[in-house]
Length: 65
Image: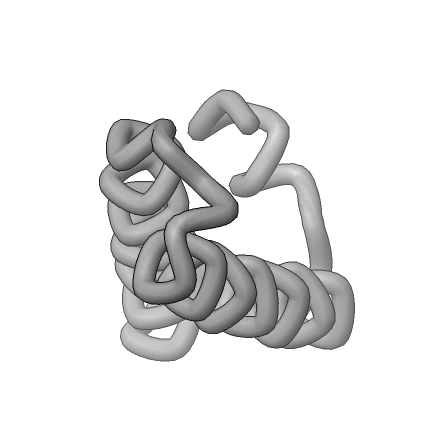
């Protein structure tokens, strides 16, 4: 998801997206641990997306955006 798309979301949608990404990260971690998932880059991408969403949430909370 692009940064501009994330910035367009309201606070409830941001929280929902964060919850979705955290669940995705957990699922990927479990799949990698059990050998079902060989794509470790997907976990990295999920972590980066979580960081993006949290950054945007923080900016909106502070009033920078």
